[in-house]
Length: 248
Image (tube, rainbow, N blue to C red):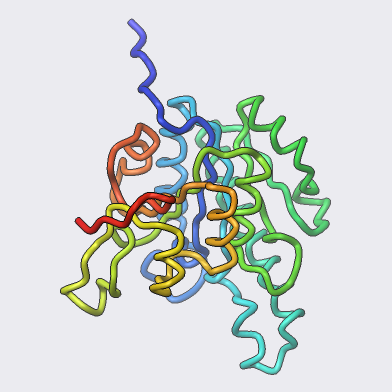
């Protein structure tokens, strides 16, 4: 007898992964074990019927913001960072396809040998056909982060929510890795995130979500099964929306 699919609160999501998340315990590069773990979490959610788009940063390979420290022009550094996101996107695509999923990497800059150009209607069509879409190269413009790219792409594909993967349980009033008295928010408004300068996503990304009332869920990606429980509507992590702030 077939098991019924779980009830889903979110049918189409944009998952935002940092490049640093792919490093595991290393100082640099891509950990095959971590990529497999992330791919398996995504696989389980896909099998439940969720339409998934993904944006990955490139900080495990190169960060444009660090370019000027090494004498590289900021614009050039940002383009180098975009290429780093493409490397990460291909690594995740490879692992997802080994699990049997159909994926497409769509790039905001032209890399025709390895990725499709980003076209909004084509991206939506891929999702409707059951393919996972990985958006590479940010927005294709320097001076914009992959956080902003995640917000922009989520709005363009009419996602129900942005889910941001981190290594802590959600959003805290202080850095929980530094201060053990840090208190987690169950819910918080976009404006409070901006006013308190909480390092969730950059200000441009938060403002874009606020203007368009796109909710953001921040959760701990290192806990197995959390992503599935989130799309089913469990109160895990922190919800950023127009609701009143509430500490747990």
